[in-house]
Image (cartoon, rainbow, N blue to C red; front, side, top):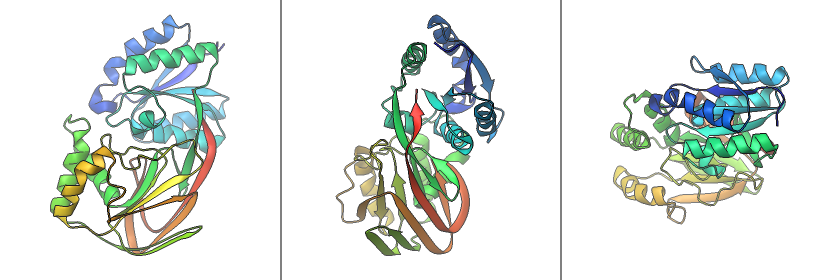
Length: 298
């Protein structure tokens, strides 16, 4: 049982604003388990990362984040930038890809009860891998190309559509046209050169809530799943979407799959990219590396 309050970082706008209304119940569940929490509500993009970094630097050995994949990404960057602290997750976001990858139930009250019980008993849940791309850490995955563009568009959609926000974003991107930049992708024992729709480095199986992009991925197996989508037409991409949702696209001719621990992606012109759904600065070169077992999940 912790002797000091556990920092709890809440993103009140996660899940299209649903997270704020769940705070009182989250507090009650922790109180019932005998776990004291100290709540910190984020005020904007980057605030969770800054607060987590400060808490870990101040000696916090464990903390909880109630939010979605964006909040988790910020927390992971705050933790790993300073050193290390165990991370507890209450999934209150839109996609909750990281929670699914960790085997955490998406029923947020049940997830909170299980987490409070583990904290009270001093039982960590599991240890997982993370990654780093161009200086930014990620826990679930990173992407260059079409999925990064979809992420940008999804973030601009404001009405509460749940997981469907990503499907709507895909359709908008299709209407605007599919870019297929020529990439050089290099990893130990693997080389690719040619036009690509997207290159995704998966630590977890899911992206965008509903897309089973890497069904073979396990965030504790000390490897990434690299998936490259060759150039496709709008019609072909629409035909592939149902298979992508079910995780049955990997054997399609347009998909190349490799297992990697580090990879370099290079392009002639700056390309959009993301880590865990966080859009990062466009670049011509992306250096991605695996950090095995660096994150402890409460």
